[in-house]
Image 1: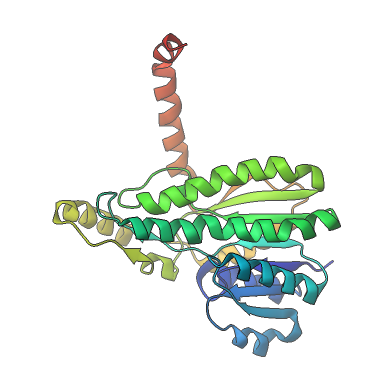
Image 2: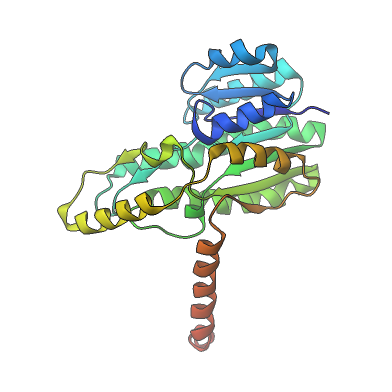
Length: 266
């Protein structure tokens, strides 16, 4: 049976690939973005409901979810994809930049989840897919603000999964690695402090050396994830496993090495 999707951040990048993958196989999609998506209607007709939406506007989020449910009669897959990157050392980023980052990457998904849950609970089913990042599992140089937003989303989603399991609702946190999307060059950058120029150069050199994944692959993968009868709580999209595996191995070793100290604090 075809599914009804609600996808945020649908204008480009991974979000656009998620939307087109779902539509291409005959599913129906409420595709939201901060700009017009009428070109999708030209291609997919009534199967798509384009909605202009800024996820930081709580009232608008509730209105969009209500409109999508009213239009299609149900909601099966909620994909919280809208977000952007904030680049800069912790010393460089401004208070407003950090607050704006959290408004989009954390509060946006919260509003979507709160708006969708009554509908999913009433139908006794649904799958919430939170698009996080490998930066939600390990910290990255000059990305502290972005990491903070994704780490918070990870913790929130783990609690959410436990809260809604009894209602027949599933939650998956998808952690993409590096994809060749506008996210590599878009986003917001803090005013640079020359003290961090060497770190910026090292990061730029690393990024230029990486063979990034094709976002179309993420589009195909999201369909398999949405169809899984028992989807995982956490899953990587593309590269990322080895990087995070090492980070977690290092943490486990440190905790083990310091276990006597930890016990002494009891």
